[in-house]
Length: 125
Image (cartoon, rainbow, N blue to C red):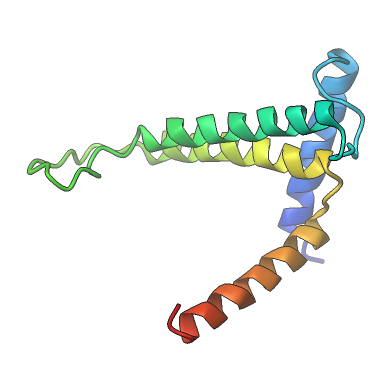
């Protein structure tokens, strides 16, 4: 029987968040949170911005993005880059867990959006 990897990622993230909540009760609110509540919105925003910060850390590993640069730096640490992307993904997973989204709902939303962007592409968007 093949294990659903996305579901396992959600399970690992929920376990981490539950453990952290037990050890540091002020770090995470109980979830799912109420996104109509100001404090909960602030918490989700802060969590998402931490993910954005981690993506910026990942982007620091890309040295050849400037179009005006003639020299290229061929040294690239893929493991460090991937580690930072995973850090960002973990924060974004936390946002999903906090808001009550599970792997099935994420997958359904992903497929729905994928259909939209393909229709746009086919329609000359």
